[in-house]
Structures are given as C-alpha cells and as structure tokens.
Image 1 (cartoon, one colour):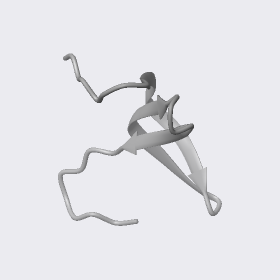
Image 2: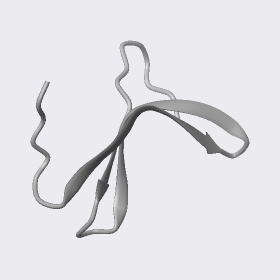
Image 3: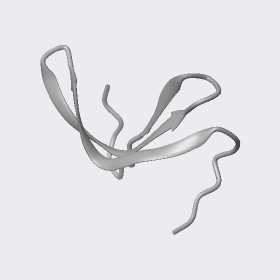
Image 4: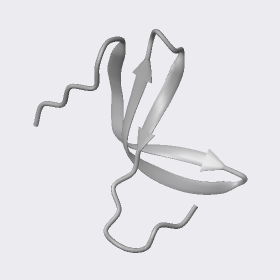
Length: 51
C-alpha cells in the first residue's frame, strides 16, 4: 500500500508503543513532518472512539 501525505512527511513506524498519562497505547501508523517538525499519529479503529 502506497500513501501520499504531501511534502515533508517521512514514515516512522507501525504499531509503535506510545505512553501518555501512564497509559500504554499502540499507534497504527506514525509519520513525522520535517517542515512542521511534528509527528502525525494515525490510529485505525473499528469500534467506538475513546481518547
């Protein structure tokens, strides 16, 4: 599968472990935008969305 996100994006990984407020999550896709200097996290869901 090939995705085009635009300029400056680089693929970091899939199923990346992420800890927030002492809770652990697995993020499906992680990208980094070199122009904005920020990460983009994509988590694919089938059920109800929780955060």
